[in-house]
Length: 394
Image (cartoon, rainbow, N blue to C red; front, side, top):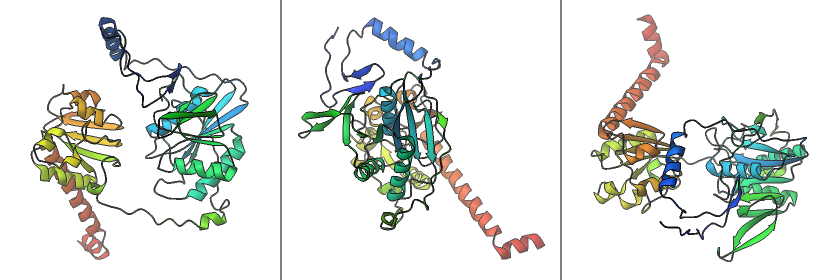
């Protein structure tokens, strides 16, 4: 039995419900008892008990979490940030979640006591001054002791820095360790940690917090109106949104793609697969076997020896799911597998498994897409004034 615990040097601690826990790569005593525990956990995975609600006495303090939503949900980084605030909140502190964009998720399950939704801030619109004004107005209304945001490159990190500068607030960025009293960030080329007391603005790095909570929040939706026109400033006019340049999905780097279709050994007709990817507007990935066979270039390979992806939707055609490939898709939100083998490893990871031949499924999807395009073209033709009149007279 191997009793050696190996410590991951890349991450100091992770905040969990039990406190700060160092990530370990090994395990102690994983013999029969460990296997039995794992088996029991799998058996009860679909029968989870309801979580208790976090108890709050008369709230005297507020922790504010701000994040952008995409397709009505928060990504894993935002959920980690919200969980971090919920875990360090005491019995007299409310956790308020401010969402930029439409949000259809369960705020209570994520640990929020109050939810403020600002659907007017679409993720495709760049409005930094408006978002800063909205955040400042929310801070003025709730007077939080600390403001938390994910430190990312998709708007939250920029917003947090803008707010800290405008409010002259203390701030900590790239926070990799946090508890109720302090934060820490890497310094000296990630060879040492710098500690300080919990600042007013906390920008949390990915994976610093375990998003799994043993409790739920109140999840109360708050009707809060923000008038973008009334709060417009001169700085707002200095920023002009040039829109988004639409590019071919095949040109998007796999690490940045939100929708990926991936081919394995079960895909023989590569042109049909590429045609389907173009129809769906998805980036193209492949398993190592498909790349080694020369069907796809090496830059399309997904897995431990290829690219690690974080797509919202990942469809795997004819991929059995070797452990290396599963490692490359571990951060994908929704995984759909199309495979003839219902016991393939990827079926255990997939949110939806279609037991069918991958090539036949691709062909059927291409036919369905062609039929849909034909129906749309027919409808558009019938709506033309002259054609519609002919149809009525006939």
